Length: 106
Image 1: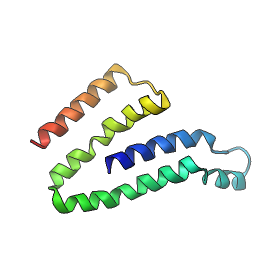
Image 2: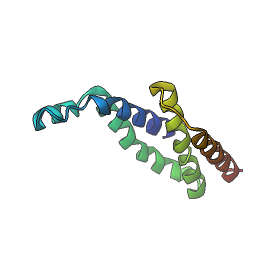
Image 3: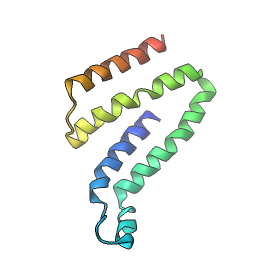
Image 4: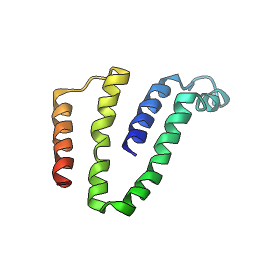
């Protein structure tokens, strides 16, 4: 689930600048069907299905804590694949969130 959300968010961000907004509604709608946006949306919308399946085997506390890792993985992925900057404050928050997930699942 985390991989789907992370990859989906990165693809949505990669595809968003390619959306045509100043050429009329038809061009805009056509631009929504470019591969990064379609694949990204598909990944993001399919992730809840895996979350529901995870709830069969994990407690809600465990599943919710693990899902919080998306807050760490999405910016890390954006740094790696989109060369986005991570500020020192964001990095500190990401480390604390990851540590909290580990503690919550001990």
